[in-house]
Image (cartoon, rainbow, N blue to C red; front, side):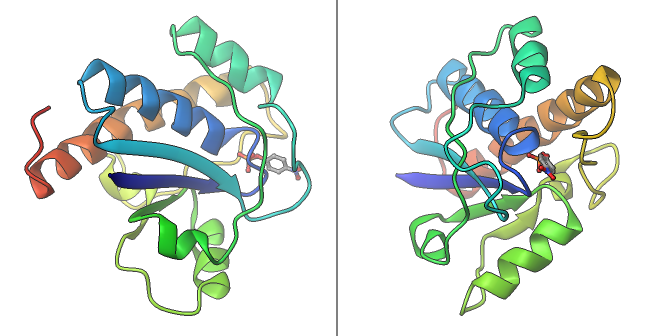
Length: 158
Ligand code: 4NP
């Protein structure tokens, strides 16, 4: 099983949306037996919380089921997850700080974005609804490319 973890700050806006989009794509591509997906936040503000209403709204609008309870990133996630995808450079730094050893599968989410490689998925929390649609589009593109990479790398059929 290939285990993938999406990480942002609060684990209520970006990473649960990424988790939902990725699960949906994994299922559509018939990869559910091979790829497991989860999300976490580097902060402890929203442990146990449902995704932000605006993330739910944008997911529903695009026909993506979304359900997650906020949890905090833990250094043991470094051993469990083969791929850790940080939403922005700050999350990326915090993850490196938490992990004792170098993690070979730590990336920025937008390392996989054909339109803006290596850029941040901006934090939409203090902005309006438009920001959530913009985040959705970035995640949709980046996760397609990420799954293409995983399929190729692990010689999966999907
Ligand atoms: P997220 O967004 O990291 O995409 O879940 C945020 C959610 C909450 C806060 C910051 C960012 N907050 O400061 O509470």
